[in-house]
Image 1: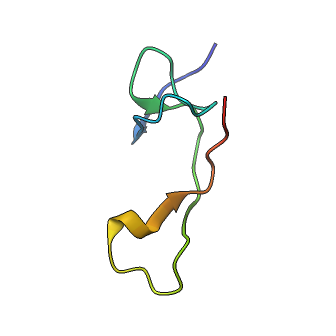
Image 2 (image 1 turned 120 degrees about the vertical axis):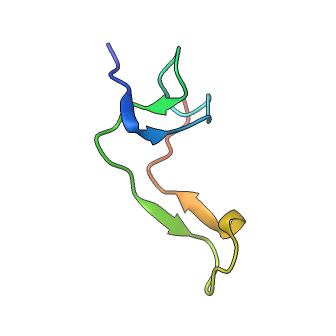
Length: 53
């Protein structure tokens, strides 16, 4: 049974770590990174813990 980590909100329903009935991640912690060499906007950031269902 997945446990919702109330410290990590998440709305990515096709991630393996998304809690099915709540918009939270089930991981204890996540890694956030970027796909840009000089990120200046939130769209430049990524959840590197994402795993496709």
